[in-house]
Length: 307
Image (cartoon, rainbow, N blue to C red; front, side):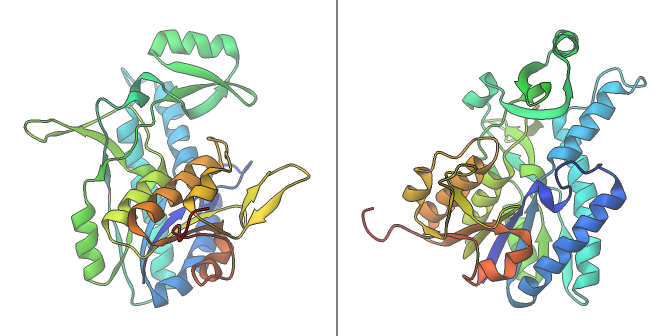
């Protein structure tokens, strides 16, 4: 079975942890343990988040006095793909002796006319007091919005249209490799309508939507979204909270999940199942093997009849 695994940000950094290299390495060790059993039995493509890492690099770049301007987000995204990809590749190499592991810097095509460019919503970087955030916004041309604890920069998050390296990923899978790619949703690029030339853009792409698109184009059998909760919960955080174990895309979309947490994950698995007729699931990292074999997590299956 061909499985595309989308690792949540908790795979590298848990909430409240310092973004030290040693902390991330310890968490990556946990990732390798969780995925090794799957890799022995199935073809794996692994995608991952990069929110804390790109935020850290953005802050460092903006504060570097040797730079005339901060590095653009698409280049910072490329840096995080290399760093996280190396951590994953080395650790999985050690956990899977004899298994071919490939890490691929990956670009994601977005539309220059995507309405997201007119409505930046994705938080990036640190929290600032209101007056400092406004000053930075004027100085650097940022958009800012209020977040928990203060104000942060927001950037566009356009919909992914195509993973540029899809054919290369397919070839690597055909050669027996486990492929790590599309980190952070992929490096966002637009294509010239005449020449096809690619240009990086100041944006970030949702990692789960990119994983769903990649899974569709690779003709994957299963999309597995791993996070820090064992199920998708209806009424999460309320006295009526209950886990969802088996749902259709239509039922999942009725949940009204928040954009900042479960919403993109729910939309990603719904799109994959609707577009392919395959299966998808959302669940906890440590239960990856059990989720893929139907023993844990929220399974999302095609609509077999009207709900």
